[in-house]
Image 1 (cartoon, rainbow, N blue to C red):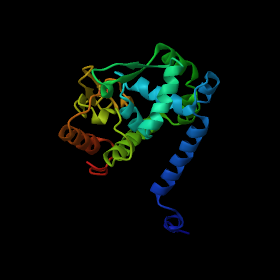
Image 2: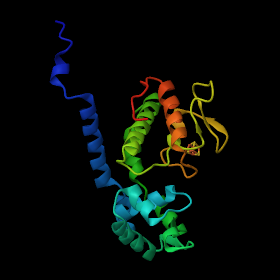
Image 3: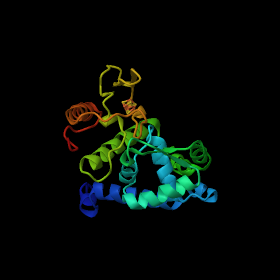
Image 4: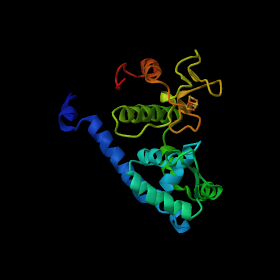
Length: 228
Ligand code: SF4
């Protein structure tokens, strides 16, 4: 018996089930992430701040760090003061109070190396996907995160697709089609970065042009499927 449409009627929209799946993963992350840091006297939220500072490269202002992690500046100030007291973060004086930058201290970097076990359980789960599936998932995540950023739901991320050095589909090689002008080398979708220390924000017109080219030429992508 041919009843092709029955599950269309029985199912919630795919987007809602994907969102539900992402919520479950987020719950696991909240409960599991940074358990390795707790014996070191660092809370999961403090460990998130350490991670953001490591990805920040040149150091970050308190307001930037707060925006990155979606908390208020006073809340972040409490967390940062605790990390400074533990010797895990250092303050670097600027010309005025607003230009003070926060950096990971060598002890903070070492603690991250020792305690960052959280990617392990998630990496094992992601490892069941084959290379192609992982690449597709990474590309999909980039699209979702960039859309959240454009709509103001997450702070600007240091992703290739918003970087002034990103040249999408600059090469004919299907496995290495993009170009990073910072290192002057080709790269593929599997190399797309979500948090690159060398990232520099491209001006909005360059970001829009790069995004159009990236989405129009990406395999299986529908042009204009995400905000420009
Ligand atoms: S500098 Fe980093 S973020 Fe920018 S294109 Fe190169 S790898 Fe990507």
